[in-house]
Image (cartoon, one colour):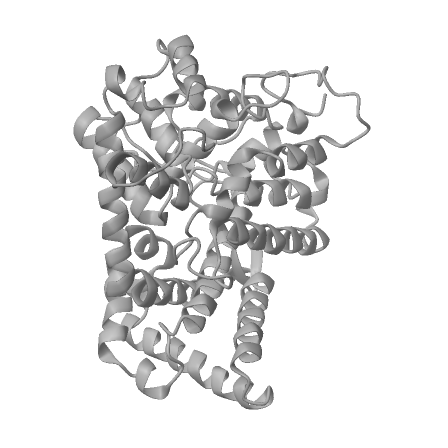
Amino acid sequence: MNIRKLRLHDKNNSQSSEDRDEYEKDYARLIQSPAFRRLQGKSQVFGAGSGDYYRTRLTHSIEVSQIAREVARRLAKTYPLLTQKAHPGLMLVPEVVECAALAHDLGHPPFGHKGEEVLNRVLRERFGIPYEGNAQNFRILMFLEKRAGSDRGLDLSAAVLLAINKYPFSLSDPGRMKGVYEMEWAGINELREQWDMPKGCSTLEAQLMDLCDDIAYSTHDIEDGIRAGKIILSEDFFEDERLVNGVVHEIIHDPASLQAVQWERTNMKEMVKRVLESYYLQWKSVYVQYGRETSRTRREMKARWVSRFANGVGIIDDAKTGWKRVTFVKDGAEDLELLRTLEILKKLAWVTLIKDFRVQRLQKRSENMLMRLWDSLQHYDTGRLLLPPDWVETYDRQRKEWPWERLVADYIAGMTDSYAEKVYTELFASRIGSIYERD
């Protein structure tokens, strides 16, 4: 059997008689899963339910998948390497990248980055184990999700699982902050060994998905920020020293950005000013071109920047690893200028949206709710009385493999924003309700 279409459990696809490609089956399993549906109720930047316009984790994931699929198609026509099939990790199949992008945020808890921060802090401080959104993806895909006739997750193909695995490490390794929990790493590592993947390297499909996630984040979140009035497209706004210094501060305190983009070769502050000024001047031009209609200008700006980034994606040799790397490429070399521009726009979204005091207030409220939910569930004897019976039954069957606190984290992480608020209200707010309301 094609090693890329191998499945960890149903190796012969014995339960399927449908005339479909394996990646089509993966796609169907993903979009019909409860975990995927719940993304519609999880925050991207603004709280889910803040308005009909703003993105949620679901719409973000769909947009990433569209960008990644189209870039994969373009690269397949450009790089002969991708048609040679010299190595299973050196291929770019659009359907695989699309599936990976749809699944890349499944492990994110309610309330966005704040939810992940809270769960990670409480697990590390109280139990010495991590919570990490990328690792939680594999908890969901390989164990928590159920499908007919199987209790071993969605059992996706090897190509899709490894395309989701942008951090190919076990979180049990000392000092590792991102990766895969030890329980799921056994299966991921088994596939990597069968593929003969170089240690610490991810597949081209995983790299492309990750880069397209950044493209979507840096362009779409800015569009949402403009719509919400958090980013004001005026000359005064982009000449604001506090804004420029805020973007610089976020870059300096992001080790991954500093290492990957080689900022030491440029004047960071000057480049931040240059990119922000360029963005503003382009906005002015498009605004006039589209009859001074803000909504049309917003969409056109987003489209132009997505196109600029997407068309800059290419593949180069990675001298450090001997593997291949998906990045921005210009004239056969890595385009550091475009990489830095992407980083600046990502940090602009972070500074103007996440760091906004109103958003911070909402995040503090979210933190308080999650902490009180955790305190109510953390002890087995009392917490088991508050969880749905099927969760407790699953834990009782598997308790030798993972601790109670991991199940509590699984349960809270699976909540949408509104469901977390609902459970919190049931436990702590004065409220008249019915025991016959369905969760």
